[in-house]
Length: 141
Image 1 (cartoon, rainbow, N blue to C red):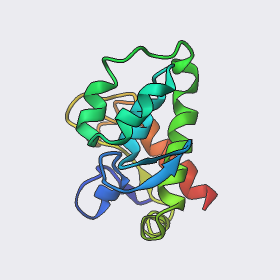
Image 2 (cartoon, rainbow, N blue to C red; image 1 turned 120 degrees about the vertical axis):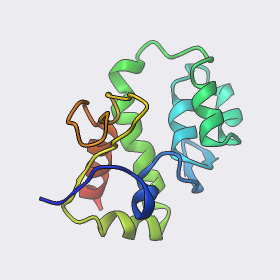
Image 3 (cartoon, rainbow, N blue to C red; image 1 turned 180 degrees about the vertical axis):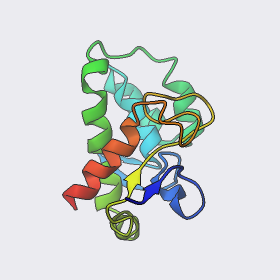
Image 4 (cartoon, rainbow, N blue to C red; image 1 turned 30 degrees about the horizontal axis):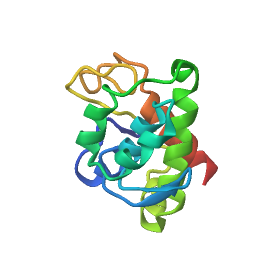
């Protein structure tokens, strides 16, 4: 089975930091990272601030806002919902995701994220939830 071990180069579009506009939960987002980080907030009045942020800004901000109490139990489902909006509303991205075929998608990284990815890339050290979420969305298309 073919594997995509990192979201770089031609596969950068798989990253949550890839800039793309889509509507989710009544707001227009600039990246899936911003939507995901906003969803951590119990108070939705903060969400419009996130919608205007770059992916890096939203990731930093996501650490400083009060987190919803049920976050750990819903975060994977939130990611799937955000990614589904990203890909279904952007036909070129949807086509690019479909073009990965049955490849194993792995968010290999060097920053030590072993929940959403695998670190170091290709090591198998990590849960790879982002890759699993992307493959779930690909299966829905």
